[in-house]
Image 1 (spheres, one colour):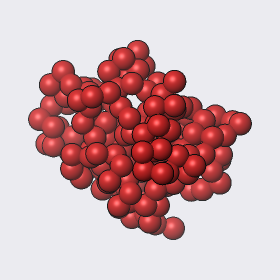
Image 2: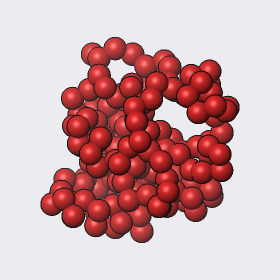
Image 3: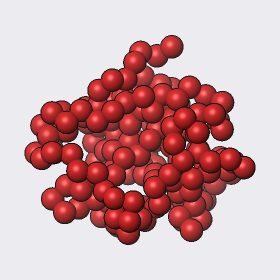
Image 4: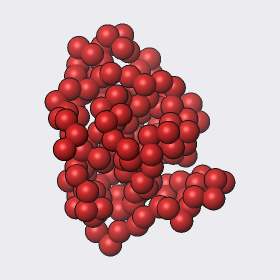
Length: 159
């Protein structure tokens, strides 16, 4: 199971106890926010794309949506999300639990600037009922991100 890979990954840093598992689904932004009792925008959703035949993950705020012109300007092509089967095979996590931790070798991670307005965010941990609260510097450190990008639209201001 992917959550065990993520748990093992965080065990290397003495942080596995920070992973939260729920008795309810956290597979969508809304469900995760309800399980965590937090604002939906603080859910760090991980979106899966294919760029030059390679899987790419973009971690964005829960209220952000991909902006196709910004995406194309950044990656040089139109956004093409992976199918559920492709996500599990290429990324190593199933839809609903996709996260930037312990993904398959070669998967590139990008962080969208929509996350920068928060002190902490909640990415999933490899299953559809898990999450971990991380500061933005921790997200940078543990996600192994390539760079910050600006590929989203529609996100609001901090409340």
